[in-house]
Length: 81
Image: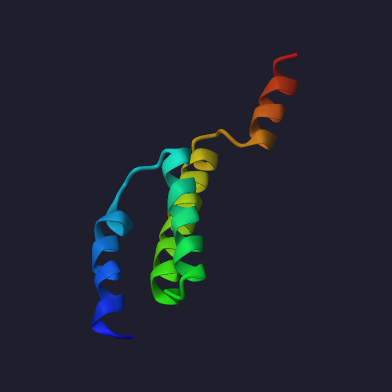
């Protein structure tokens, strides 16, 4: 990879470290990853997509660990009847 192609990767570092978990932000990051892939920046696309995936996975784990899974909610509603 040339030094010219490496500069955009350096600009992505703050995005990769971002803790913004809003769905719109994660979707925009995923779309940017797709655009990077289309333009041949496979490394940048992979790094960004992995960051989005890891954030979404962490959010889902937090959500289900806090008793918010659909199955747990259905179980609670059945017990309350």
